[in-house]
Amino acid sequence: MSEQKLFDAAVEILQGEAGNRTDTLPPADRDPGPAARFPLHWLSDLGSAQAAEMARLWSGLPLLTRRDLIARMEEEARENFEVDFLAVARIALNDVDPEVRVHAIRSFWESGDPKLVERFIQFMEKDPDLTVRASAAEALGPFVERAELEEIPPSVGERITARLISVIRGKDDLEVRRRAVESVGYASDPQVRPILDSAHAHSAEPMRASALRAMGRSADTAFVPVVADELRNPAPILRAEAARAAGALGMKKSVRLLIELLEDVDPGVRGAAIDALGEIGGGPAREALEKMLNQAAGDEFDRIEMALENAEFEDSLGDLPLLDIEELDELDEDEEEDGEEDEDEGE
Image 1 (spheres, rainbow, N blue to C red):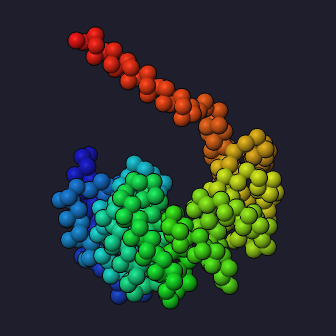
Image 2 (image 1 turned 90 degrees about the vertical axis):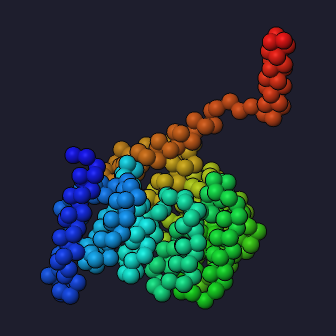
């Protein structure tokens, strides 16, 4: 069946939903939505005409149907890179329901489209719903990272950073401010280090956890001693975030402590330690992961396997012969001389 026919079939089902709205029924009697009745990939990679038709249909769908669709689309897109539901997510950004808007914002986790930046800033600063504001603050982080990597204009990253800092220093809910702290961690702005120090000294444990996550994203080695100390913190959430930060910062001197955390009583801490050892690599890290793999099962087994693959890749980079600047200059000079010789022969 052609993609257009699949789209038409999905629209027909959704039109039936729109004609039988059940928003006024008690929750137990409401239809859970159509997502289980047709494969979601029928609504993947929509063209402009299809997206316009979907936009006309969207607002007439029952609330639970809209929530169900966008939530499942977000989840499936994270698991399957072959599907693209962003056309539907763009429509859902305008939804009157906060839960739908949250899933729509989160759907753009890998988009990198700078056209979304102003919209997300507006969500972060002005949306009436707390969760939407926090989700938007979180979603702005990858844009800051892309700007630092010069994948999008640096000016875009500077504007986002300025707005994030404004929110952090403002009076919004702690959840919004801590997500802004996590996102600003990617920025190389000189204001970031004191902001993260202040967040780490905050009285609220969630803010301290966000500070550690941001430290890991910062690539700033000044935070290494702080992160190392927090690997021993009595609070599991802080141990876990410290482990993630240690991995992100490539803290090889913390491998011994991270190996100890593989036996932590908290599964979140163990998972973070597994990931961190995979990021850092090295013989001791691989040996500890291989030993743990022999006793693991299920999701933990898969996680350790992935970490071992990452560790092997990280170690392979260290085996590559690296040319120094002088050697590169010599190569450039040789290429220029070869080019001149070719021109002489052509004459």
